[in-house]
Amino acid sequence: MMAMKARAGADASATKAPNAGVAWPAYFRRESWRAPALAFAVVAAASGCQSKSGASDVLDPSAIAAPAGQAGGAAASSQQAGSPIQGSAPQAGQTPGSQTLAGPTSASAAKAKLTLGTGSTKVTMLLPLSAPGSTGENGRKMYDGARLAMADLGDKLLTLTIQDTRGDSGYAKDLAVKAITSGTAKVVIGPSELAAAQHLAKLSGSKRPPVLALADNFAGGPGIYSVRLSEADSAAAGAAAIAGKGARKFVLMVPAGADSSAVESRVANALSIYGATLAVTLPYSVADGAKAVSDMGSLVEAPDAVVVACGDNSPTAVLAALKAKGIPGKAVTLIGTDRWLERPMDPLYEGAYIAALDESETGPIADRFKTAYNYQPDVNVAYAYDMVALSAGIASSAGPDGFSKQVLENTTGFRGSTGLFRFRSDGSSQRSMPFFRVEKGRLKLVEKQTAGF
Image 1 (cartoon, rainbow, N blue to C red):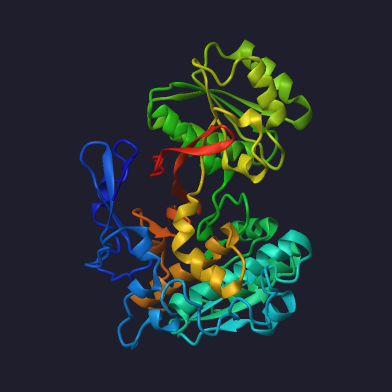
Image 2 (cartoon, one colour):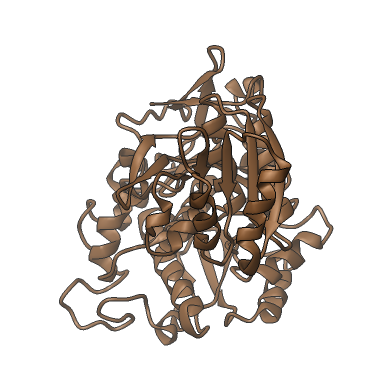
C-alpha cells in the first residue's frame, strides 16, 4: 500500500470504479481509492483478488490466476519467475536462432513470426521491426517484450498480429488506418511513429477500436491513448511534488516549439491543484538559453522554483546560466524532467528534483526477460509488455468486446511494470512516479510516489 496525495476533491467519486464487478486477472488488477481528507491510499482490490505484497506479486506469472475455462491459465505458459520462458527464446548459452546473443531479436526473425497466440481476441501491434538504427532496435525490443507478455499472460487469450511499419511514418499511418477500419482488431497497440499517431488523433469516428500508441511525446486524442511517459507528465509531477511542500511561485523554461504548450498546460494544471501558480513560461532555443535565464530576472521576482524542460537537447546551457544566479539554492528549487536522464548525469544536475519512472517496478519481469532473451530489458520492453498484458487482462475479464472507454478510462488506473498509470478521456495518460533528488551524481529517492492522480 502506498500513500499518495491527490487533487483536492478530484476523483473522490472513484471509490467504486465504473466497471466494478469485472474480475481482473492478478497481473492487471484494478486499483481502488479510499479518501480520508486529501490523503488517498492505493490498494489492490480487484473483485476479491488481493495482492499480498504489491507489484512484485502482481507481475509474477506464478501468481496469475487462470482465466475461467482455461486449465493452467496464463501461468502455465511459462515456468516460475527466473526460469526460461518456454518456446519464446533460446536459453543463455544456446546458439540463437531468432535473436542475437546479447540483443533484441533480429529483424528477419521477427518478421518470420508475426502472429502470436491462439486466443479469440484479435490484437494488432505496429512496430518498426526493420527500421534502421535505434528506431529498429527499439522496435525489436518491443517485439521481445510483447513475446514475453504473450508467454506470461496472453497466449490463450489473444491472437496478436504484429505488422512491420519499417519506421516509415507514412506507411505506419496507412497500416494504422487499415487496422482500425478492418473490423478485425479489438485493440491496436502502436504505432511508435509520432506523425502516424498524430494523424490517427485527427480522425473522427466512434465505431473503431482503441489505439494504445507507443510514440514518444504524443499528446493523445479521443480513443487514441498515449502510452509513454511524456516530458510534460514528468515536469508536471515534479512541479506538483514541490508545490505540495509549500512552493507557490513557479517559472517554466521550455524549448520553443510545438510541444511547449503541452508542457505549459500540464504544469499549470498540476500547480493549480495546490494553489500554486505558473508565474511565467520562457520558451528558449539551444542558442539563447542563457538569455532566457537573464529575462527571467526582469519578469519574475523571487520565484520559489524553476522547472526546466529540455526536449531533444541537453539542458546544460540553461543549467549553467541558472547556476550562475545561484539556482538551485536555499531560496529557489530546481526541477528537471525524465528527458534529462536520457544523457549521462552532468554535475550541473546536482540538487535538482526529478519525477521519473521507477526502474524497480520492472524487476519482476526483468529476470525472466534476461533469461529468455539474453539481454537486459529497457523501457521499450516494459511499455510493450504492459500494453499486451493489459489487453490480455481485459480479454480475460470482459471478453473480446470489453475494450470500451469505460474500462480503459477507469479513473482508478492500472499497475504494470512501468508503475501505476491511467488513461484520460483526451487520450493522455497519467502516471504516479517516484520523486528523486540528484545528489553526488546519482538519483536519491525522496518520495516513493508523486501525486500523479
